Length: 394
Image 1 (tube, rainbow, N blue to C red):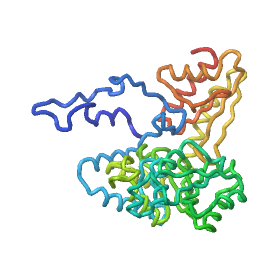
Image 2 (cartoon, one colour):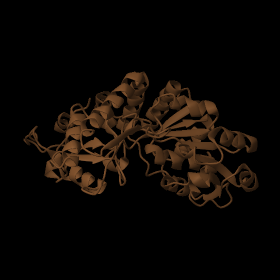
Image 3 (cartoon, helix red, strand yellow):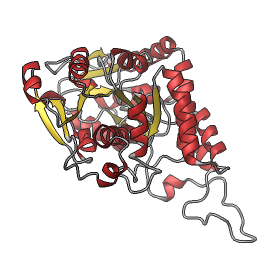
Image 4 (spheres, one colour):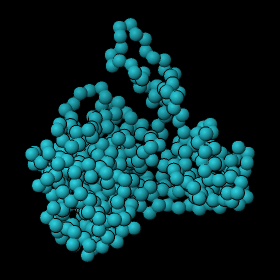
């Protein structure tokens, strides 16, 4: 498991010049950079939320990134090589490393709108005269489709197959599917793919938070989606600002041309550096080789330990739930009579304590704990703190 302090000791001092002045002494190895900045780290009992800094990178990933940081390479060549290796790992026709799943949404949409046409690429987000409509189910609208709209497209909402058939037209550039919303929509993933093939419209599945299980890397490609994206900094535990875009070779090639490092593109700001490219590849290699069954058993052990610790408190009720698609790991739901202390008050006490603890954001009617990103020994701390707070000892 990664060690935050050991890693921080190895990075340059904040604000230091790239090349130290002659005779300058190295910064002390004991600096606590977060403390200097007034930042309070916390125990993650919430999960891989971006605002909570997602996951901690694996030691193998950090080693790869440090290796890459010491040499210069031609970035486009590295993109090519890493993309080819990733495609082989997941059985995709082609692949690329993006600046997170949001960067993949932008680049993939641009590929469907402008393709490899240089004149169109230069004009985005001005889509006049291009295919510039994206079909999406009403229940699939979500905050991250802003990255799609940034290309200059119009989102066309539909609910049923009949509505889809009336809406699809020569201006339809893409069909967007939010994987986690599959149970809520009226058109499931398989039917979405069938409709796309019927009308010759590319289908894009946003499965950002949908590994584990590892099988999902292959599932949606085999289902027939033309593009699929996964976040790199969640369950895969690669660089948080990196992601994967997998799919059709022609669309991946077009996506590459519509984003960094190519200048004058709608995705120029979506940079992926050489360290992230290599780190993302190694993170994927490690993730695919993991014993997924053993890891899931460890996650189950963690939630059981917390549940066992709090059950002695009067009126406590616990239930373990595993979300069916996104964040597919055990979550512990804890409920109680809130006449003495509310969920919000417990959340505040956990956050303000020492060490600080974060739980699943938005917990209101019950406390929701997801300790899959907890480090060794932290599950026990979380269990004791919650029990002490609920029993009035803290």
